Length: 132
Image 1: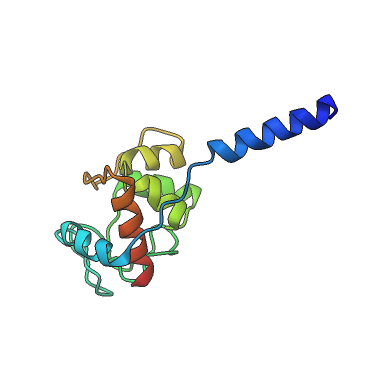
Image 2: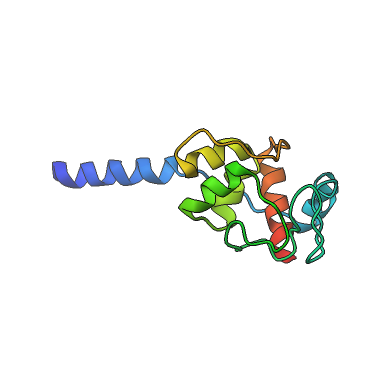
């Protein structure tokens, strides 16, 4: 085996092994976890609480819930544009302010102080939101 083939094999193996494994979420568990979210979010379209309605939120463009007044940090990140997809939500639900800062490229804060610490909980909530 040539040196270049060995190098490609090693690089491919490292890339494969370092990729974070996707955790399959469970929508039923997510529904139970959502009870914590329901203090601030509704699943009913047009019903905003402290946070925007999450009806149809999966795949939605940022800042588009009608009638909801978004915070400055969220709006700053929206200027860069993002969609509430699996990749975004995976990071956002773990640390909302950190994710907004990353997108905006500056120190932005989210009004959402709630964080999910467990990868399984994040995956479950995402699966639940997909089903809505």
